[in-house]
Image (cartoon, helix red, strand yellow):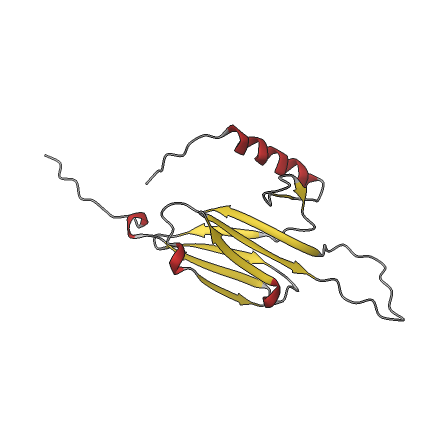
Length: 148
């Protein structure tokens, strides 16, 4: 079933800005106050759906479970947290550090067909998995059409 969405030109401008920023290795985040702040890093996320639910998987390597927060507010799902840099030990020096550390935040607009109260979250081996069931209205139904 297709849904009709209202066109907002600012969304397209924000998308272009995000794509340009990601070319330079720093994704944009929107935290309400500073709309164009650069994130320290952003985890990779897969979003999929089937007939019963939406599935969101976020890669959070070396992020502790207690450093991850998931919240839903006004139809927006936000995943945030922090990856800490390991302590520098005496006698150990780093020759190269390519991985990003620090805080992150990813936000996603949820469709109206998402039942946010039934969300289930699982965190294992650095992978956050969120199951968001669809409302009864969002589950596709087959309708038989009689042709004369």
